[in-house]
Image (cartoon, rainbow, N blue to C red; front, side, top):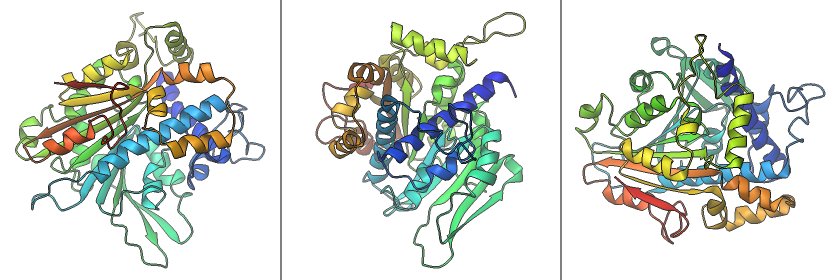
Length: 402
């Protein structure tokens, strides 16, 4: 495995330790984060969960916890808003069926939090949940991390699909009390730099059953930033249904949402520090053996919020809305209750630094629909104002139409 690949994969460890630190401080509840973080090395180079390594998340700065908590709240809000949308249904789409696809899932616990009632959204929907990441990561998640995550009274099960390589169908079966959950859970090994057509071949395999006609949300948290820019654009075009399968997907009404949380360097000094830090880790600025520089990453080619929204539009998303995370925090996406809970957890002395940091991250949501059936839902999801289901506020976000 190339050094740059290992460096990118290690960012999932950083994310899970930051979330673990939030949970340990009381910012939010996640009963699965401890088992998912086991074995991750913290800043003290000791593995979390090993002897002497139990407190490897405690060195996180309050500003990191505040930002991570805002990230969790914003992504949760986007997923919950999608799942709660009232969609016009017909016989071609079983009532309340939804698909959630987490790209670059890493050690993410979102499915588990929804599956076991920490987040709302599964009650009124049959949800097919897919997680996609590098085969090396998926192998570990299927065989180790999830095995340790089953709550008391449940047994973790997984079945590998040999036809599509490193991919699994997983479940948690109740060992006693009745369990009304009817969600399905799939783990797909795939390098997102590869042609997206191969990803959809794996997803659509009967073993997994992804269906383009079912309303779907794709979620990427600090993922698209690491892809070569052209690869990221190809992927987005496919997600919107504008790849080689466009003719097939347009035969039926479809509704696709994308939610992205990403840094925005903003072409300023703080943003340059962000890029320099990634270069030190071997993620950006790499060169081939012949001395030629690798293609720039998406992060380098889309440094602003406007760039992200324009990219979504050009990739086929009809409407895209976004804001930087400080506006998300102050104006409705992160709820008042969540902000109050964060304030009770700990004081923040570096307020100016926090504002600067938050203005260098953004939440973007895009929608693409075909046919008339989902037009109203698409407009609602990307709206602003008091009726915005995600919480985007007029004057504090940007909306672009194709």
